Image (tube, rainbow, N blue to C red; front, side, top):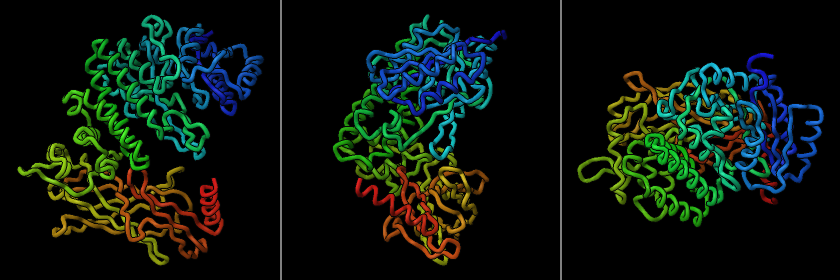
Length: 530
C-alpha cells in the first residue's frame, strides 16, 4: 500500500437528488486508493435517493450510507454528520449535484502532505449546464503551487467562500471545534471558512482543478447561490457575513475580519445591486433598509479599503433612506464597472455622484489609472438586412479620458455558452470635443455567426499603450432593443434580438432559419401560458 492510500474521507451530502447523487459518489470513488471511504449522508430524501445509494454500497465496501431521520433544512447538519463519522486522517466535502474531477484528491493530498498543511485548496470550476461552459472560481488564488504560512499572508483567501474545493486534516477540524452551522442556515460555507481561517492554519494551494461546481439555472429547485429573488436570501447572506466578521474579530484576526467587509462590498453588494431593477418595489425598499442598517455598522476604514465600485454603491445607499438611482447603481455595480453620465461636480469642482447626493464623493476617480476607471461606452446595435452596424460612444469622465488619450477600440462578440467568436475587429476613435465624447463604428455580418446569445466585450487602447477592458452600455429607445426578423441569403430569415443584460450591458440573441424563429415563438408561447 502506498503512503497516501486510504487517507481521505469524502463526505457527500444530498436531499431529493436521485438524478445526480450517484454521479457525485462515483466521482469520489474514482479518485482511487487515496480515498479510504465515501460517506453519503442523505438528508431524509423521499425520491429514492437512499435506495439508490444503498444499492451502490452493496457493491462498494468503501461507500457508507447515513440516512438522517429528519430533514435538517440545510447543508451544515449533514456535513457535520459526515465529519463525525469520518475515520480517515483527511476529509473533504462534495455536494450531490457536483463532481470531483479525476486527480483532485491526489493533488490536494500531495500538497497537504508535502507542506504538512492542515488545509489544502485548489481550483473550482463553475460549469454551466447544459452548455458545459466552465469558468474558474477565484482563479487568482490558484495561479501557482504554494504554501501560505498564515491566512493573513494571503488576504484574498477570505474571498474564496467555498468549503468544497478544499481538503482538511480531520484532527485539525475536531481539535479546533470547527463545524458547520446546524439546521437551516444558508451560506453556511461563509461561517465554516471563517472558523477555519480564525484557527490560523498553513494552507497549501494547488493550481489543478479539484472541484466541478454544476450551475443549473433551469433547475426546479435553485441552489441558494442562484435563488436570490426572495428578500430572505439577502437577509441570510448579511447574517452569514456578519457572523463571519464576528468570528474573525473574536479570534484577534482584525485584518481578516476587515477583509470580509471588503468581500461584502465588492461581491455581495454589487451582485444584488445589479438585480434591483428586476425586483418588486416592496423588495427594493426592504433591501435598501436592510442594507443601510448593515452598512451603518461599518467603519469608515472598512469603506475606504474596499474596491471603488462597491464603495460607491455603499455610499449611495447610506446617503438616502429610499431606493435611489437604480439604473446608475446597476451599471457601477457591473463587472467591469461603468459610471454613466451625468457627471456632477461639487461647488469646488470635485467629482460627486449627483447634484442631489453631493455627499457621495468620487475624488478617487481623479487618481485612479485609466485602465481601472469605470469608463462608460454606449453601444447601439442597428440590425439591417443589408448592413448591420455597431455604434459605440465613449464618454468623458471628469477629464480623465482626454488625459489618457483614447486612440482605438477593439470589439469582440463571443457566444455565451460555448465561447465561439462571432466577430472581432478594431476601429479608431473619433473625438467630438463639443460633446466630450469619442465614437467608433463596426459593420457586422450577423448571419455568419449562427444561433446563440452573443456578449460584447470592448478593449479601449490609450496613447500610452495601456488598455481598459469593458462592456458596452445597451442604449434603449427608438426601437434599438426590439426584436427584428431580417431576410438572409444564408438562412432565409434571421431573428435578431439586441437586449440589455442584468448589468445593463449590450448582448444579442440570434435565431437563424425558420426553425430558429419557430423555436423562439414556441418558447414565448410557453411563457405566456405557463
